[in-house]
Length: 488
Picture 1 (cartoon, rainbow, N blue to C red):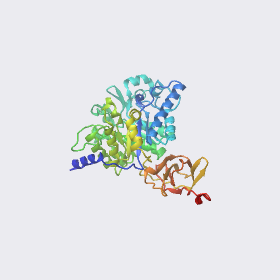
Picture 2: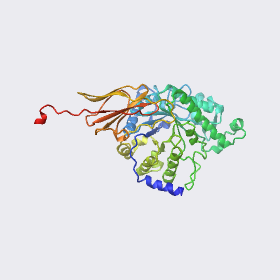
Picture 3: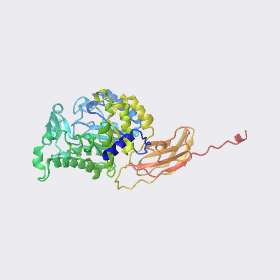
Picture 4: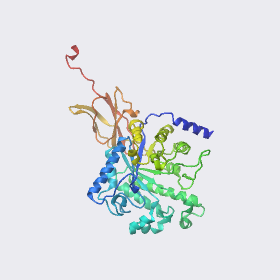
């Protein structure tokens, strides 16, 4: 019966259209590792650094124009970083040489340019991998395996942080602390927060024998180790700013589902990710599982994620648009379209698309997003379990007319980080309707309006926790007929 019900939902997801929601995370992973999305070439001088910046701006322009509201910017890859760190060396991908600055701070630049376009910027951190043996040789004494040899283990030519080592959680948390404390990021996004899939061969018997409690199995101990890293990162980040979101990108399947294809490539089988526990304990504000599969390997698991996270947080479904590449599966556009629609049908809090470069490579997908699925803007879902008081509504909203056009003006709200503006062609505004969202990210208390076509407006304040205040309304003054014209 369970299998029949899920299959029915799968069929419905292909035909039932869900209206564009007012609150939805629309994220994209911007991959810097190997320069997959950016940068296309390293920068060794000021001119090349400017080309990198221009390239990133073009990419962010495209992301914003398609209706996205969030960017996961890969700030740390495997033992190298894309910001001015006191802990780990500059990535050779951005500067051409490990440990050398490109002449500017890419993370600071990305955050500022995202915010300029009304996009949140979450710092994406690859956590457990520490780079290949070859990479470590290029880094020399700066390599993590050289600086912290007791904390690192080698498996199949790759170095990893041993999650069971007593210093592992603290080390990863210091990276998150450095970013959260120095940059105006909106979130810390943890990737590869797991044991390698070959965990049966993972060389951690020494740390297990040294540090695991006597009554805890190897599997339980590994789960506890990953959870400890997640919770330590969360505590550090929230200690700096409670409004910075902490999230993770777990595997696309949480657990096995009876009646569907079996695989040990799931959170609870093979990689030690207690993702629902992270949400239940408040260690993650949301999760973005990497659901890069089709058909019965996708829809039942999406349904399962949404059901499991209903009371704990929310799930943003990670969709693999890279699968449209001929070499990566040659998926049709309809494969992605059906998955996008299913996320709304099942009640997910949004979508995260992997990865940014494919938005430029597949114009049919871009057209569908900008002209259909993301036709109307969306606000970020508000954070849950927040104890802080909500902002008060704005006051003294006035519509002013002038030679250069109309403007809305209001008094600032002390706890607001931005404002949203709604507009309607009728005499009333419906702030529950995404189609009436005019601006989702206004930093000032004065905003210019488009050429006259709207009759009524509403403005809300949004606080650091993405919570929206009650609206305040104003109507466009009725057009007064000049004296004598009515008698003509």
